[in-house]
Image (cartoon, rainbow, N blue to C red; front, side, top):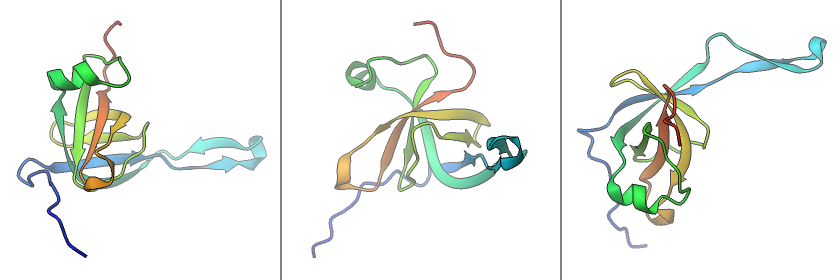
Length: 122
């Protein structure tokens, strides 16, 4: 089968990100309530957070965004909407709100993320 070139984010701008994966157990003695662990698991991946462009703002399918909205680019890391990660560049915490997909064309992933710190009024 013919191999095609796959677009990649340049490794020079990628840096470590830490996906926060909360852990815990269901406490059967208290009606099955979820008891989170004190230290959530951290999974490291490479990525970069960039600002939204004017084109992103114009064609955003959700129609809403905040001043804390940005984009996360990764080369192959699959993240779920609602996942939280820490950008080690400035120790900012972000939550993924939308996957901006390129489809099955290549492994590069784009996500719309919101930085924690409060949303602007809409």
